[in-house]
Length: 344
Image 1 (cartoon, rainbow, N blue to C red):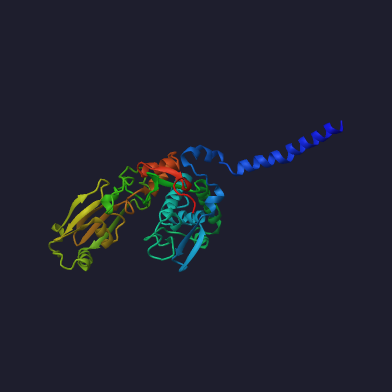
Image 2: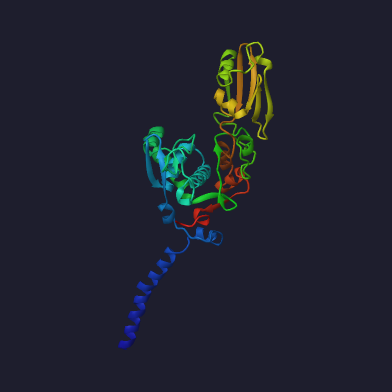
């Protein structure tokens, strides 16, 4: 009888202490249900804790110093700076994955070259050079304290829901170009930049018409137009008498933007013309009205890759962030960082 009681006690101990301990350890070292679905493709397991432990060195332009913060926290600051917080959650998720992919393409821990503007940094907060980024204080100032808590929570959720995910082509992270408004159709990268990347192809981008800068007009006096151009090309054969017959658009892209334009005897890229006159995009038309020249633009930004307002329109119509990304980036896959890189 005593021996039976002893075995019962042993079995109770195993059931209440040892067995749960085994189960807990299995769950800690295994995939979550979502990760299990990706296990066959990813091959390498990376937990949320692993992802959260990755840090990025970035140069804070406004603070004038190098900072090291967790990659996922950095992405939250990028999304806050790059996309309106009022946008749909799926659009914010798409932006988070694009921002993370861009960062991974810069980070030295993944064998990349870092920021060539600031030695020692993976990336900087200069939007013209890398990606925009905002601190918590900057977000509070921009949104106000009441909106900050709602907006920051919304952005954090979008980043957390896509933690560790990047966009890949041939199992390598892409260069995820993005812009505000395409004007109805995005650009082939080769029509804007020197490199023709297979995943940056021209695609339709519907639903942008309500964007605040979908169209814009700039009125310039003929004299100011001429003086601005001659600042860059002093020998251009243009004057107030011949200017109307001295401007011609030579070539346009698949997306409808100006590739080459001739002004007087000078032929330049549409991108340079945009820079000279500070235009919203290279999708422009020129009209003459007496002593003034009107330049009408459609879209905002370079037009390559994901249109942010187009992404928001897709999200409003029920598209997921994966569908948005695969629409704007041709032939890509969404993968975990660990499926592309081993931890170093």
